[in-house]
Amino acid sequence: MKRQFGKWCAWAMILGGLYMAPRVLGVFELNVLLGTAIFALFSLSLNLLLSFTGLLSFGHAMFFAAGAYGTVLVLTRLSGFPLLPLIGIGAAAAIGLALLLSPLLVRVSGHAFAMLTMAFSQIMYATVMKLSHITGGNDGISGFAIPSVSIPVVGVVDMALEQNFYYFAISILGLSAWVMWFFTRTPFGSIMVGIRDNPERVTYLGFSVPLSKAIILCVSAGFAGVAGSIYALFQNMVSVDGVLGPLSSFSPLINCFIGGLGTFIGPIFGTGIGTILLELMSAHPEQAQLVFSLVLIAIVLFLPGGVIMLYWKANTRWMAVRQNIQNRFFKRRIYE
Amino acid sequence: MLLEVKDLNSYYGLSHVLQGMSLTVYSGEIVGLLGRNGMGKSTTLKSIMGLVRPKSGSIRFQNQEIAGHESYQIARAGIAYVPEERRIFSNLTVLENLMMGVKPGENQYQGGWTLAKLYHHFPFMKDRSAQKGAHLSGGEQQMLSIARALMGNPALLLVDEPTEGLAPLMVQEVRDVLLKINKEGVAILIVEHNLKVALSLVERVYLMGKGHIGFSGSVQELQSMPHVQEQYLSI
Image (cartoon, rainbow over all chains, first blue to last red; front, side, top):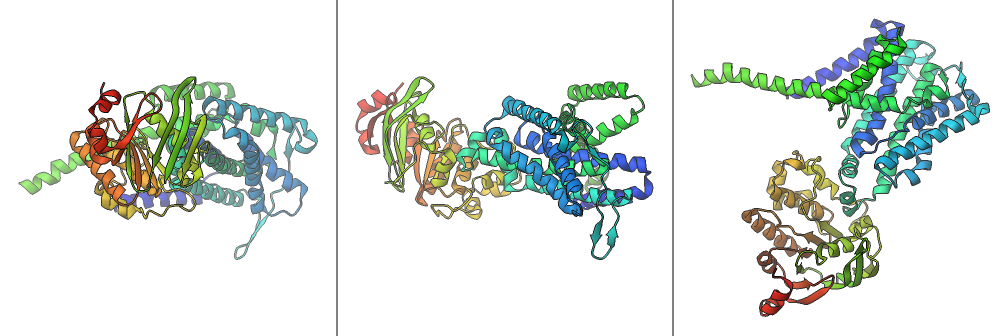
């Protein structure tokens, strides 16, 4: 009961904080917050493969990019396309790509999966560069207006306003994260863990491992697509180096490692720490990479479970302290 | 006839493990598959389950050829497998482990095994349903592995060395549970090392020589033939 109450309090604080953010924070801080949220969703989608299913992807950015390009291409070519379906287009583009690649990707795991995903994202990079008359190549596509949304009671909401776009984006991102969390709680979530721990067992219980992997890949890709789609709208541009560059696939991986593998929310913390660190050091870009790398090394060496472990350790400690206090002050009184 | 294995040949790489293996299991009976180590008992179960692909031969289950099918298809057809060494998912809770046993789609065989019925047979699982599989004792893990297999309502249960490494009291319990399950109409093909346990459990036995059946008959027949026991079982 008490724990439930604490949980609701935490949720209320998070939601209240996200709601109040545009009133309290300046434009710059708000942008950092939204950028963190976008990459947190991207990292969460990768974590679905990495922590839950045990599949290490080195090319997850291709789904992020598919979402970004899908949304932007439709937005710039079909005028008057509403905003919400645009996000759906981003997700659909990423899922389409996942479906296209799944016949090959689901047959492998381990190193082979990592190498194949990396190869496919390289192919995608080359393709986007080659099709520069459509994708804009190196320069990318930019300077498009985000369509307004008309909500029945509220009226027309102008998305060019930072505050409005923030509320729209944070709702979609939050909802996506929640749906993903829910997905891990369904029996299908158990199948993911089963595939990670021992695929053979999953097979003789009556589930097709390749088919299950394909479904997981599509779900993960879909949410990466949503993140990419919102990223493109938020940046008001999409370019090949922005979404498919060398670090695009690795930064969510690093976020997962910093936050803590094996948990659902770890990557959110990892993304937050990573983003804040880079923003703090933004005046010195070269040193930023150095500091970032040192932090990564420190975490891998001294905190292998990620920063989430700090919370668990503190929690266990606090439980022990509380028990101690109870024993000392309350139980004795009963006996005396 | 529930299961008919005929002239099965299976290989591990180049080694010819099953050499013309044949056996049958009828509905509702318990059959033991005994023999020394390395004769191919576990491989027989794995071949039936499709975890080892037989090179040649036929496996008919409920008058359907299943040799060469994918494991998950065989599982859906109504065969459940309880492997050696209690292969549960240690990172999932007891309840999640059980729910993994529920097969997708319609069950071919309606055995009526539900969570409530399993909790009735295995009361400890109800109390510990939220605990991780890793926190169970060896015997409890074995029970969970059997219960998970039953969640799929199988017509035939393949059980590989269920009492290996268990305390004597737990051995008794596993034996009783298997008998209870069999009373509910589930046929069982069991590989068992412990001859005493095996003979108190099964109706018919197959003794394996190198990769094939050396003797088949009832428990009484086996007990009246010490030389056969000598030939296939003693070390």
